[in-house]
Image (tube, rainbow, N blue to C red; front, side):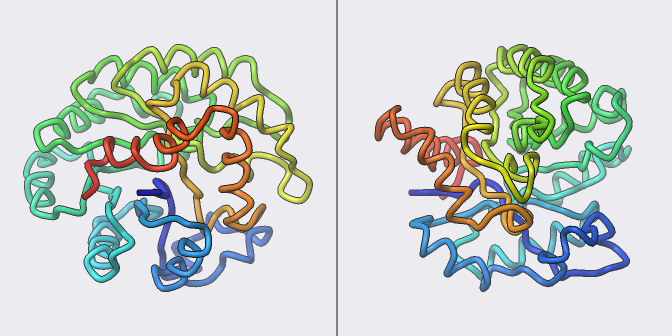
Length: 275
């Protein structure tokens, strides 16, 4: 099964979705499974994982409703306040939903030490009781905190979204790659090959400038802990879906079919326990 391990759905709301700037006007509209279905079919993708974009339980419930209505949505990564003193009860309530696989917080918008704060670590630790995963959304300067988090909670499975957003447009790679090497030593941690075109020059990126970053994650995570994600519809500010998928297909071609099957599906199925 070919799986897109990272994409989003939303009903666009200007007051809420302030992160969608004027430069990103192409995604200032609703994006729903009915829009994605023909795109996945055209690209030979059979299933997807819907990931939260808003910090609310209402968003989690919306994604679960969409997953119930559309067969392409095999899993949901939602949001819950992991710092809450009643987090165990909230997770227990959410555990009734089979499609809910894990949670994410938009930590990239938080202070650099957010992931290491005691109340947050306490909440993340509770995920293990329900076999929930955690998606790490950060910038490179937050990789040290992420590294500390995954070491503190080895019983939880983590995945680094968008390769921790290396600053490709400025060709910054050394410090980022050093931390990627360290965080990848934790066997409970995976990485999504996603969101890279939007970290490059939106109007003038090319695969040759992105491949060195793929070299780093393939070297350190290896083909058993990497998974393809389109980051649709956010990717549309820089590339069409087929360009995003084609970028990784071109890179992975020399690795052979077995590795392709892992990165484009099997690893996501295993990580998120997809049916």
